[in-house]
Length: 116
Image (cartoon, rainbow, N blue to C red):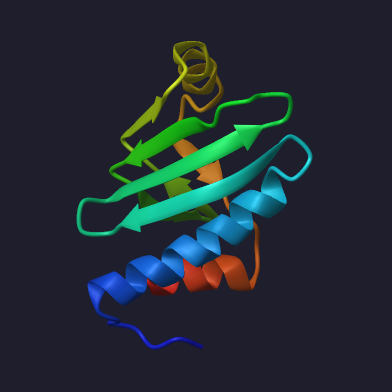
């Protein structure tokens, strides 16, 4: 297991890699995530996603992120979500009204929590 208290830049790199792997796996049937960055100091996640059938990537920004555990389930929570395509942002606002995304059980969740 990775030690707690990693310097900010290293923590951001490791989180970026973990979230990129999670995103690629979660969205493999509809998109290809090719860029994801984490700024843990500002609590901002940025992802560029190339959706199936699209020529240009979509930029998604998650502001004020954190982690929340309810029973045995861990969620990525956030204050604000912006999307470079307005209509997608409106859909996501409706789908993610509770401002949280359920994370898969297992090592990935443990890794993410250990860096926060």
